[in-house]
Length: 519
Figure 1 (cartoon, rainbow, N blue to C red):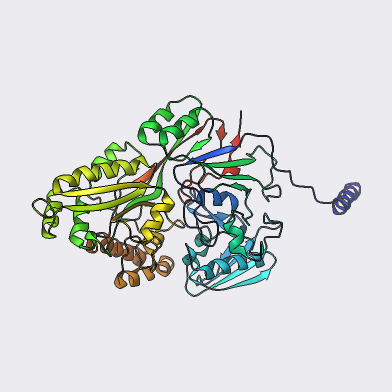
Figure 2: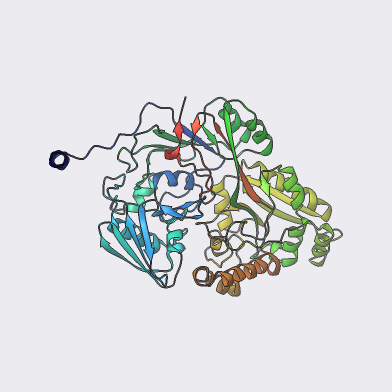
Protein backbone atom coordinates (compact mmCIF):
# COMPACT_ATOMS: atom_id res chain seq x y z
CA UNK A 1 0.00 0.00 0.00
CA UNK A 2 2.77 2.46 0.89
CA UNK A 3 4.54 1.73 -2.39
CA UNK A 4 1.34 2.49 -4.33
CA UNK A 5 0.77 5.69 -2.41
CA UNK A 6 4.33 6.79 -3.07
CA UNK A 7 3.92 6.07 -6.77
CA UNK A 8 0.64 7.95 -6.82
CA UNK A 9 2.24 10.91 -5.04
CA UNK A 10 5.01 10.97 -7.65
CA UNK A 11 2.44 11.04 -10.44
CA UNK A 12 0.56 13.88 -8.76
CA UNK A 13 3.81 15.84 -8.35
CA UNK A 14 4.70 15.21 -12.01
CA UNK A 15 1.25 16.38 -13.13
CA UNK A 16 1.49 19.48 -10.95
CA UNK A 17 4.88 20.39 -12.43
CA UNK A 18 3.89 19.69 -16.06
CA UNK A 19 2.08 22.26 -18.20
CA UNK A 20 -1.52 21.38 -19.13
CA UNK A 21 -1.80 19.55 -22.43
CA UNK A 22 -2.45 21.70 -25.47
CA UNK A 23 -5.91 21.16 -26.98
CA UNK A 24 -5.80 19.50 -30.41
CA UNK A 25 -5.57 22.07 -33.18
CA UNK A 26 -8.35 22.51 -35.69
CA UNK A 27 -8.33 20.04 -38.57
CA UNK A 28 -6.87 21.03 -41.89
CA UNK A 29 -6.87 19.85 -45.47
CA UNK A 30 -10.42 18.50 -45.52
CA UNK A 31 -13.15 19.45 -47.96
CA UNK A 32 -15.35 22.28 -46.69
CA UNK A 33 -18.94 21.86 -45.57
CA UNK A 34 -20.97 23.90 -48.08
CA UNK A 35 -24.45 25.03 -47.02
CA UNK A 36 -26.93 26.27 -49.65
CA UNK A 37 -29.72 28.75 -48.89
CA UNK A 38 -32.12 30.43 -51.31
CA UNK A 39 -31.96 33.83 -49.56
CA UNK A 40 -29.19 36.20 -48.48
CA UNK A 41 -27.33 34.85 -45.45
CA UNK A 42 -26.40 37.97 -43.46
CA UNK A 43 -28.69 40.95 -42.97
CA UNK A 44 -27.22 42.13 -39.65
CA UNK A 45 -23.74 41.41 -38.26
CA UNK A 46 -24.21 42.79 -34.74
CA UNK A 47 -25.19 39.86 -32.47
CA UNK A 48 -27.20 42.23 -30.27
CA UNK A 49 -29.41 43.17 -33.25
CA UNK A 50 -29.31 40.07 -35.46
CA UNK A 51 -32.84 38.86 -36.17
CA UNK A 52 -32.95 37.13 -39.54
CA UNK A 53 -31.40 34.51 -41.82
CA UNK A 54 -27.87 34.87 -40.42
CA UNK A 55 -28.93 32.48 -37.66
CA UNK A 56 -27.64 29.64 -39.87
CA UNK A 57 -24.12 31.03 -39.59
CA UNK A 58 -24.30 32.73 -36.18
CA UNK A 59 -25.18 29.53 -34.32
CA UNK A 60 -21.81 28.19 -35.49
CA UNK A 61 -19.96 31.40 -34.58
CA UNK A 62 -21.59 32.45 -31.31
CA UNK A 63 -22.84 30.48 -28.33
CA UNK A 64 -25.54 30.92 -25.71
CA UNK A 65 -25.60 30.02 -22.03
CA UNK A 66 -27.98 27.12 -22.63
CA UNK A 67 -29.22 25.02 -25.53
CA UNK A 68 -32.71 23.66 -26.18
CA UNK A 69 -32.69 19.86 -26.39
CA UNK A 70 -35.36 18.52 -28.79
CA UNK A 71 -35.34 15.11 -27.09
CA UNK A 72 -35.86 16.22 -23.49
CA UNK A 73 -37.65 19.42 -24.55
CA UNK A 74 -35.65 21.21 -21.87
CA UNK A 75 -32.61 23.44 -21.67
CA UNK A 76 -29.23 21.72 -21.59
CA UNK A 77 -25.69 23.03 -20.91
CA UNK A 78 -23.74 25.07 -23.43
CA UNK A 79 -21.59 27.91 -22.07
CA UNK A 80 -23.26 27.38 -18.70
CA UNK A 81 -22.68 23.96 -17.15
CA UNK A 82 -25.40 24.29 -14.51
CA UNK A 83 -27.94 26.78 -13.14
CA UNK A 84 -30.50 27.18 -10.40
CA UNK A 85 -33.39 29.49 -9.62
CA UNK A 86 -34.91 30.76 -6.40
CA UNK A 87 -38.30 29.32 -5.35
CA UNK A 88 -40.11 32.43 -6.59
CA UNK A 89 -38.36 32.28 -9.98
CA UNK A 90 -36.95 35.82 -9.66
CA UNK A 91 -33.27 34.97 -9.12
CA UNK A 92 -31.23 32.78 -11.45
CA UNK A 93 -27.58 31.79 -11.03
CA UNK A 94 -25.54 30.28 -13.87
CA UNK A 95 -22.21 28.50 -13.48
CA UNK A 96 -20.01 28.96 -16.54
CA UNK A 97 -17.74 26.55 -18.36
CA UNK A 98 -14.14 27.36 -17.34
CA UNK A 99 -11.36 28.01 -19.84
CA UNK A 100 -13.51 29.34 -22.69
CA UNK A 101 -12.06 32.11 -24.85
CA UNK A 102 -13.51 34.39 -27.48
CA UNK A 103 -12.12 34.43 -31.00
CA UNK A 104 -10.41 37.67 -29.96
CA UNK A 105 -8.36 35.69 -27.42
CA UNK A 106 -9.98 37.24 -24.36
CA UNK A 107 -11.56 35.00 -21.70
CA UNK A 108 -15.29 34.35 -21.64
CA UNK A 109 -16.01 34.84 -17.94
CA UNK A 110 -18.89 36.10 -15.82
CA UNK A 111 -17.94 39.73 -16.44
CA UNK A 112 -18.05 39.13 -20.19
CA UNK A 113 -21.50 37.52 -19.90
CA UNK A 114 -22.80 40.47 -17.91
CA UNK A 115 -21.35 43.01 -20.36
CA UNK A 116 -22.64 41.13 -23.39
CA UNK A 117 -26.22 40.77 -22.20
CA UNK A 118 -26.37 44.33 -20.88
CA UNK A 119 -25.25 45.64 -24.27
CA UNK A 120 -27.92 43.56 -26.01
CA UNK A 121 -30.56 44.83 -23.58
CA UNK A 122 -29.57 48.44 -24.15
CA UNK A 123 -29.66 47.98 -27.95
CA UNK A 124 -33.45 47.52 -27.79
CA UNK A 125 -33.33 45.87 -31.21
CA UNK A 126 -34.12 42.50 -32.74
CA UNK A 127 -35.12 40.01 -30.05
CA UNK A 128 -33.61 41.97 -27.13
CA UNK A 129 -37.06 41.90 -25.52
CA UNK A 130 -36.21 38.37 -24.29
CA UNK A 131 -34.29 40.02 -21.43
CA UNK A 132 -37.09 42.45 -20.45
CA UNK A 133 -37.63 40.68 -17.12
CA UNK A 134 -34.00 41.25 -16.06
CA UNK A 135 -33.54 44.09 -13.57
CA UNK A 136 -29.84 43.50 -12.83
CA UNK A 137 -26.92 41.14 -13.49
CA UNK A 138 -24.32 40.42 -10.82
CA UNK A 139 -20.87 38.85 -11.15
CA UNK A 140 -20.36 36.49 -8.20
CA UNK A 141 -16.99 35.15 -9.32
CA UNK A 142 -15.03 34.41 -12.49
CA UNK A 143 -17.46 31.69 -13.53
CA UNK A 144 -20.66 32.60 -11.66
CA UNK A 145 -23.26 35.14 -12.77
CA UNK A 146 -26.62 35.92 -11.14
CA UNK A 147 -29.70 37.52 -12.71
CA UNK A 148 -32.33 39.37 -10.67
CA UNK A 149 -35.71 39.51 -12.37
CA UNK A 150 -38.61 41.96 -12.14
CA UNK A 151 -41.02 39.07 -12.64
CA UNK A 152 -40.52 35.33 -13.05
CA UNK A 153 -39.68 33.92 -16.48
CA UNK A 154 -38.01 30.61 -17.47
CA UNK A 155 -34.57 32.21 -17.83
CA UNK A 156 -32.86 28.92 -18.66
CA UNK A 157 -35.14 28.71 -21.71
CA UNK A 158 -34.67 32.40 -22.54
CA UNK A 159 -30.89 31.88 -22.41
CA UNK A 160 -31.17 29.27 -25.18
CA UNK A 161 -32.81 31.74 -27.57
CA UNK A 162 -32.10 31.60 -31.28
CA UNK A 163 -31.47 35.36 -31.23
CA UNK A 164 -30.29 37.98 -28.69
CA UNK A 165 -28.87 35.40 -26.27
CA UNK A 166 -25.43 35.26 -27.90
CA UNK A 167 -22.48 35.88 -25.61
CA UNK A 168 -19.80 37.97 -27.33
CA UNK A 169 -16.69 40.01 -26.54
CA UNK A 170 -17.82 43.60 -25.97
CA UNK A 171 -14.14 44.64 -25.82
CA UNK A 172 -13.36 43.41 -29.33
CA UNK A 173 -12.98 46.98 -30.62
CA UNK A 174 -13.44 50.57 -29.41
CA UNK A 175 -16.24 51.01 -31.96
CA UNK A 176 -18.03 47.69 -31.74
CA UNK A 177 -20.77 48.64 -34.21
CA UNK A 178 -18.21 49.47 -36.89
CA UNK A 179 -16.26 46.30 -36.06
CA UNK A 180 -19.31 44.09 -36.64
CA UNK A 181 -20.50 46.00 -39.72
CA UNK A 182 -17.23 45.13 -41.46
CA UNK A 183 -18.12 41.43 -41.30
CA UNK A 184 -16.07 40.45 -38.26
CA UNK A 185 -17.15 38.44 -35.24
CA UNK A 186 -16.43 38.27 -31.52
CA UNK A 187 -17.90 34.91 -30.66
CA UNK A 188 -16.72 31.81 -28.84
CA UNK A 189 -18.13 29.12 -31.11
CA UNK A 190 -16.25 26.47 -33.07
CA UNK A 191 -16.01 28.63 -36.21
CA UNK A 192 -14.94 32.19 -36.93
CA UNK A 193 -15.48 34.47 -39.94
CA UNK A 194 -12.71 34.52 -42.52
CA UNK A 195 -14.45 35.97 -45.58
CA UNK A 196 -17.66 37.84 -46.35
CA UNK A 197 -18.75 38.90 -49.84
CA UNK A 198 -22.05 40.76 -49.58
CA UNK A 199 -24.34 40.07 -52.52
CA UNK A 200 -22.15 37.29 -53.92
CA UNK A 201 -23.24 33.69 -54.39
CA UNK A 202 -20.40 32.43 -52.17
CA UNK A 203 -21.35 34.92 -49.50
CA UNK A 204 -19.68 33.71 -46.32
CA UNK A 205 -16.77 31.51 -45.27
CA UNK A 206 -16.00 30.33 -41.72
CA UNK A 207 -12.89 28.55 -40.45
CA UNK A 208 -12.35 26.41 -37.39
CA UNK A 209 -11.25 28.29 -34.24
CA UNK A 210 -8.09 26.56 -32.97
CA UNK A 211 -8.77 27.20 -29.28
CA UNK A 212 -12.41 26.13 -29.23
CA UNK A 213 -13.22 24.73 -25.78
CA UNK A 214 -14.75 21.57 -27.26
CA UNK A 215 -11.43 20.57 -28.85
CA UNK A 216 -10.68 19.08 -32.25
CA UNK A 217 -9.59 15.58 -31.32
CA UNK A 218 -11.92 13.74 -33.69
CA UNK A 219 -12.83 14.32 -37.37
CA UNK A 220 -14.46 17.70 -38.02
CA UNK A 221 -14.96 20.09 -40.91
CA UNK A 222 -12.37 22.84 -40.79
CA UNK A 223 -14.17 25.18 -43.22
CA UNK A 224 -17.84 26.11 -43.60
CA UNK A 225 -19.13 27.94 -46.66
CA UNK A 226 -22.55 29.48 -47.22
CA UNK A 227 -23.82 29.87 -50.79
CA UNK A 228 -26.94 31.70 -51.96
CA UNK A 229 -28.67 29.81 -54.78
CA UNK A 230 -32.27 30.99 -55.36
CA UNK A 231 -32.96 28.37 -58.06
CA UNK A 232 -33.83 25.06 -56.30
CA UNK A 233 -33.14 22.99 -59.42
CA UNK A 234 -29.64 24.42 -59.64
CA UNK A 235 -29.11 23.79 -55.91
CA UNK A 236 -30.09 20.16 -56.46
CA UNK A 237 -27.70 19.81 -59.40
CA UNK A 238 -24.87 21.26 -57.29
CA UNK A 239 -25.61 18.68 -54.59
CA UNK A 240 -25.65 15.84 -57.11
CA UNK A 241 -22.28 16.93 -58.48
CA UNK A 242 -20.80 17.06 -54.98
CA UNK A 243 -20.15 20.81 -55.16
CA UNK A 244 -22.29 21.51 -52.11
CA UNK A 245 -22.86 19.50 -48.94
CA UNK A 246 -26.33 20.50 -47.71
CA UNK A 247 -29.47 22.01 -49.22
CA UNK A 248 -31.74 23.42 -46.54
CA UNK A 249 -35.00 23.05 -48.43
CA UNK A 250 -36.16 21.30 -51.61
CA UNK A 251 -39.56 21.36 -53.24
CA UNK A 252 -41.58 18.10 -53.14
CA UNK A 253 -40.47 17.04 -56.63
CA UNK A 254 -36.77 17.45 -55.85
CA UNK A 255 -37.09 15.94 -52.39
CA UNK A 256 -38.65 12.84 -53.91
CA UNK A 257 -35.71 12.62 -56.32
CA UNK A 258 -33.22 13.10 -53.48
CA UNK A 259 -34.86 10.36 -51.42
CA UNK A 260 -33.86 7.75 -54.01
CA UNK A 261 -30.62 9.27 -55.30
CA UNK A 262 -27.40 7.33 -54.66
CA UNK A 263 -24.90 9.06 -52.41
CA UNK A 264 -27.49 11.45 -50.98
CA UNK A 265 -29.10 11.42 -47.55
CA UNK A 266 -32.43 13.10 -46.70
CA UNK A 267 -33.99 14.31 -43.48
CA UNK A 268 -37.65 15.06 -42.80
CA UNK A 269 -39.31 16.27 -39.60
CA UNK A 270 -42.03 18.59 -38.30
CA UNK A 271 -40.93 22.12 -37.52
CA UNK A 272 -41.93 25.19 -35.56
CA UNK A 273 -41.79 27.25 -38.77
CA UNK A 274 -45.15 28.81 -39.63
CA UNK A 275 -46.14 30.30 -42.98
CA UNK A 276 -47.79 33.72 -42.67
CA UNK A 277 -49.61 36.09 -45.00
CA UNK A 278 -49.51 39.42 -43.19
CA UNK A 279 -52.16 41.91 -44.31
CA UNK A 280 -51.57 45.66 -44.45
CA UNK A 281 -54.09 46.93 -41.87
CA UNK A 282 -52.78 50.52 -41.98
CA UNK A 283 -53.24 51.73 -45.56
CA UNK A 284 -54.37 50.71 -49.03
CA UNK A 285 -57.40 48.57 -49.89
CA UNK A 286 -56.66 46.02 -47.17
CA UNK A 287 -57.19 48.66 -44.53
CA UNK A 288 -60.81 47.57 -44.99
CA UNK A 289 -61.33 44.51 -42.80
CA UNK A 290 -63.86 43.13 -45.30
CA UNK A 291 -61.13 42.87 -47.93
CA UNK A 292 -58.80 41.15 -45.45
CA UNK A 293 -61.47 38.64 -44.53
CA UNK A 294 -62.18 38.01 -48.20
CA UNK A 295 -58.53 37.16 -48.87
CA UNK A 296 -58.52 34.82 -45.86
CA UNK A 297 -61.49 32.99 -47.35
CA UNK A 298 -60.08 32.87 -50.89
CA UNK A 299 -57.04 30.75 -49.96
CA UNK A 300 -57.47 27.09 -50.84
CA UNK A 301 -55.70 25.75 -47.76
CA UNK A 302 -56.43 22.06 -48.34
CA UNK A 303 -55.41 22.10 -51.99
CA UNK A 304 -52.10 23.79 -51.15
CA UNK A 305 -51.27 21.15 -48.55
CA UNK A 306 -52.11 18.35 -50.98
CA UNK A 307 -50.03 19.92 -53.77
CA UNK A 308 -47.04 20.37 -51.49
CA UNK A 309 -47.01 16.60 -50.92
CA UNK A 310 -45.70 16.26 -47.40
CA UNK A 311 -43.57 19.42 -47.35
CA UNK A 312 -46.11 21.12 -45.09
CA UNK A 313 -48.79 20.27 -42.54
CA UNK A 314 -52.12 22.01 -41.84
CA UNK A 315 -51.94 24.97 -39.48
CA UNK A 316 -54.33 25.45 -36.58
CA UNK A 317 -54.11 28.95 -35.18
CA UNK A 318 -50.83 30.85 -35.20
CA UNK A 319 -48.52 28.80 -32.96
CA UNK A 320 -47.58 25.30 -34.19
CA UNK A 321 -48.31 22.11 -32.33
CA UNK A 322 -45.73 21.26 -29.67
CA UNK A 323 -45.45 24.74 -28.16
CA UNK A 324 -47.40 26.58 -25.50
CA UNK A 325 -50.14 28.57 -27.25
CA UNK A 326 -51.11 26.01 -29.87
CA UNK A 327 -54.88 26.12 -30.41
CA UNK A 328 -56.36 22.92 -31.89
CA UNK A 329 -59.50 22.82 -34.02
CA UNK A 330 -58.85 25.98 -36.04
CA UNK A 331 -58.03 24.59 -39.48
CA UNK A 332 -59.18 27.19 -42.04
CA UNK A 333 -61.20 26.32 -45.15
CA UNK A 334 -61.69 28.04 -48.50
CA UNK A 335 -65.02 29.87 -48.95
CA UNK A 336 -65.19 31.66 -52.31
CA UNK A 337 -68.87 32.58 -51.94
CA UNK A 338 -68.13 34.23 -48.63
CA UNK A 339 -65.14 36.01 -50.16
CA UNK A 340 -67.26 37.36 -53.04
CA UNK A 341 -69.92 38.62 -50.63
CA UNK A 342 -67.37 40.47 -48.50
CA UNK A 343 -65.74 42.02 -51.56
CA UNK A 344 -69.12 43.23 -52.84
CA UNK A 345 -69.85 44.86 -49.50
CA UNK A 346 -66.53 46.68 -49.79
CA UNK A 347 -67.40 47.88 -53.30
CA UNK A 348 -65.23 45.36 -55.15
CA UNK A 349 -65.78 41.87 -56.48
CA UNK A 350 -67.94 40.74 -59.40
CA UNK A 351 -69.87 43.76 -60.69
CA UNK A 352 -67.88 46.13 -58.50
CA UNK A 353 -64.63 48.04 -58.85
CA UNK A 354 -61.58 46.02 -59.89
CA UNK A 355 -59.11 45.45 -57.07
CA UNK A 356 -55.36 45.06 -57.40
CA UNK A 357 -53.27 43.75 -54.50
CA UNK A 358 -49.50 43.64 -54.31
CA UNK A 359 -48.07 40.50 -52.69
CA UNK A 360 -44.35 40.00 -51.95
CA UNK A 361 -42.47 36.83 -51.08
CA UNK A 362 -38.89 35.57 -50.89
CA UNK A 363 -37.35 34.65 -54.20
CA UNK A 364 -36.40 31.03 -54.79
CA UNK A 365 -39.16 29.65 -52.58
CA UNK A 366 -41.28 27.44 -54.84
CA UNK A 367 -43.88 26.90 -52.10
CA UNK A 368 -44.58 30.62 -51.97
CA UNK A 369 -44.72 30.73 -55.76
CA UNK A 370 -47.36 27.99 -55.70
CA UNK A 371 -49.37 29.89 -53.09
CA UNK A 372 -49.20 33.11 -55.11
CA UNK A 373 -50.24 31.28 -58.29
CA UNK A 374 -53.22 29.58 -56.66
CA UNK A 375 -54.37 32.71 -54.83
CA UNK A 376 -54.16 34.67 -58.09
CA UNK A 377 -56.30 32.05 -59.85
CA UNK A 378 -58.87 31.94 -57.02
CA UNK A 379 -59.32 35.73 -56.89
CA UNK A 380 -59.35 36.44 -60.63
CA UNK A 381 -63.05 35.47 -61.08
CA UNK A 382 -63.81 37.80 -58.16
CA UNK A 383 -62.39 40.80 -60.08
CA UNK A 384 -59.23 40.84 -57.96
CA UNK A 385 -55.74 40.86 -59.49
CA UNK A 386 -52.73 39.74 -57.45
CA UNK A 387 -49.46 41.43 -58.37
CA UNK A 388 -47.07 38.82 -56.94
CA UNK A 389 -43.40 39.75 -56.69
CA UNK A 390 -40.56 37.43 -55.70
CA UNK A 391 -37.82 39.48 -54.05
CA UNK A 392 -34.50 39.01 -52.26
CA UNK A 393 -35.29 38.85 -48.55
CA UNK A 394 -33.45 42.05 -47.63
CA UNK A 395 -35.27 44.02 -50.33
CA UNK A 396 -38.65 42.54 -49.37
CA UNK A 397 -38.11 43.33 -45.70
CA UNK A 398 -36.99 46.91 -46.37
CA UNK A 399 -40.05 47.48 -48.54
CA UNK A 400 -42.24 45.95 -45.84
CA UNK A 401 -40.93 48.31 -43.19
CA UNK A 402 -42.08 51.15 -45.49
CA UNK A 403 -45.55 49.61 -45.89
CA UNK A 404 -44.91 49.02 -49.57
CA UNK A 405 -47.23 46.04 -50.11
CA UNK A 406 -50.71 44.77 -49.33
CA UNK A 407 -49.71 41.22 -48.41
CA UNK A 408 -46.31 40.33 -46.95
CA UNK A 409 -45.55 36.61 -47.13
CA UNK A 410 -42.94 35.18 -44.77
CA UNK A 411 -42.06 32.38 -42.40
CA UNK A 412 -41.90 32.83 -38.65
CA UNK A 413 -40.24 30.67 -36.01
CA UNK A 414 -39.82 31.21 -32.25
CA UNK A 415 -36.94 33.10 -30.69
CA UNK A 416 -36.83 30.30 -28.14
CA UNK A 417 -39.01 27.22 -27.79
CA UNK A 418 -42.10 29.11 -26.64
CA UNK A 419 -45.09 30.66 -28.38
CA UNK A 420 -44.69 34.25 -27.25
CA UNK A 421 -42.58 35.59 -30.12
CA UNK A 422 -45.21 34.64 -32.71
CA UNK A 423 -47.40 37.31 -31.13
CA UNK A 424 -45.02 39.62 -29.29
CA UNK A 425 -42.98 40.37 -32.40
CA UNK A 426 -45.43 39.97 -35.27
CA UNK A 427 -48.71 41.30 -33.88
CA UNK A 428 -47.79 43.55 -30.94
CA UNK A 429 -47.83 47.26 -31.80
CA UNK A 430 -44.45 48.50 -33.02
CA UNK A 431 -43.36 51.87 -34.33
CA UNK A 432 -41.36 51.81 -36.50
CA UNK A 433 -42.35 48.31 -37.64
CA UNK A 434 -39.71 45.60 -37.63
CA UNK A 435 -41.65 42.36 -38.03
CA UNK A 436 -45.09 43.74 -37.21
CA UNK A 437 -45.70 43.90 -40.94
CA UNK A 438 -49.47 43.99 -40.51
CA UNK A 439 -48.89 47.40 -38.84
CA UNK A 440 -51.60 46.40 -36.38
CA UNK A 441 -52.18 48.80 -33.50
CA UNK A 442 -54.44 47.15 -30.94
CA UNK A 443 -53.92 48.33 -27.32
CA UNK A 444 -56.24 45.61 -26.02
CA UNK A 445 -54.20 42.92 -27.74
CA UNK A 446 -50.96 44.51 -26.50
CA UNK A 447 -52.22 44.49 -22.93
CA UNK A 448 -53.23 40.83 -23.22
CA UNK A 449 -49.88 39.81 -24.72
CA UNK A 450 -47.91 41.66 -22.05
CA UNK A 451 -49.31 39.28 -19.41
CA UNK A 452 -48.14 36.11 -21.14
CA UNK A 453 -44.42 35.82 -20.20
CA UNK A 454 -45.10 35.90 -16.46
CA UNK A 455 -48.20 33.70 -16.73
CA UNK A 456 -46.10 31.10 -18.55
CA UNK A 457 -44.23 30.60 -15.26
CA UNK A 458 -46.91 31.33 -12.68
CA UNK A 459 -50.13 30.04 -14.27
CA UNK A 460 -49.73 28.05 -17.47
CA UNK A 461 -53.49 27.46 -17.77
CA UNK A 462 -54.09 31.21 -17.76
CA UNK A 463 -51.25 31.67 -20.25
CA UNK A 464 -52.88 29.19 -22.62
CA UNK A 465 -56.21 31.03 -22.30
CA UNK A 466 -54.44 34.29 -23.16
CA UNK A 467 -52.94 32.71 -26.27
CA UNK A 468 -56.35 31.43 -27.34
CA UNK A 469 -57.86 34.91 -26.90
CA UNK A 470 -54.97 36.49 -28.82
CA UNK A 471 -55.36 33.97 -31.66
CA UNK A 472 -59.06 34.76 -31.98
CA UNK A 473 -58.39 38.49 -31.88
CA UNK A 474 -55.71 38.44 -34.59
CA UNK A 475 -57.29 35.96 -37.01
CA UNK A 476 -61.02 36.53 -36.45
CA UNK A 477 -61.72 39.92 -34.91
CA UNK A 478 -58.97 41.84 -36.73
CA UNK A 479 -58.36 39.49 -39.68
CA UNK A 480 -54.75 40.69 -39.74
CA UNK A 481 -53.24 37.54 -41.24
CA UNK A 482 -53.77 34.14 -42.77
CA UNK A 483 -51.81 31.05 -41.70
CA UNK A 484 -51.79 28.51 -44.56
CA UNK A 485 -49.42 25.84 -43.23
CA UNK A 486 -46.61 24.73 -40.93
CA UNK A 487 -43.41 23.62 -42.66
CA UNK A 488 -42.13 20.06 -42.55
CA UNK A 489 -38.37 20.30 -42.93
CA UNK A 490 -37.14 18.36 -45.94
CA UNK A 491 -33.34 18.45 -46.30
CA UNK A 492 -30.90 16.77 -48.61
CA UNK A 493 -27.17 16.35 -48.00
CA UNK A 494 -24.14 14.40 -49.09
CA UNK A 495 -23.99 10.78 -47.96
CA UNK A 496 -20.50 11.40 -46.55
CA UNK A 497 -21.95 13.77 -43.96
CA UNK A 498 -22.61 11.91 -40.72
CA UNK A 499 -24.18 12.99 -37.43
CA UNK A 500 -26.75 15.50 -38.74
CA UNK A 501 -29.75 16.13 -36.48
CA UNK A 502 -32.48 18.70 -37.08
CA UNK A 503 -33.44 20.85 -34.09
CA UNK A 504 -36.75 22.72 -34.66
CA UNK A 505 -35.83 25.39 -32.09
CA UNK A 506 -32.97 26.49 -34.39
CA UNK A 507 -34.61 26.53 -37.83
CA UNK A 508 -32.41 25.70 -40.81
CA UNK A 509 -29.29 25.61 -38.60
CA UNK A 510 -26.68 22.93 -39.17
CA UNK A 511 -24.40 22.66 -36.15
CA UNK A 512 -21.38 21.80 -38.26
CA UNK A 513 -19.09 21.02 -35.32
CA UNK A 514 -21.32 18.02 -34.48
CA UNK A 515 -20.94 16.50 -37.95
CA UNK A 516 -18.48 13.79 -38.96
CA UNK A 517 -16.95 14.07 -42.41
CA UNK A 518 -16.19 10.71 -43.99
CA UNK A 519 -14.98 9.40 -47.32
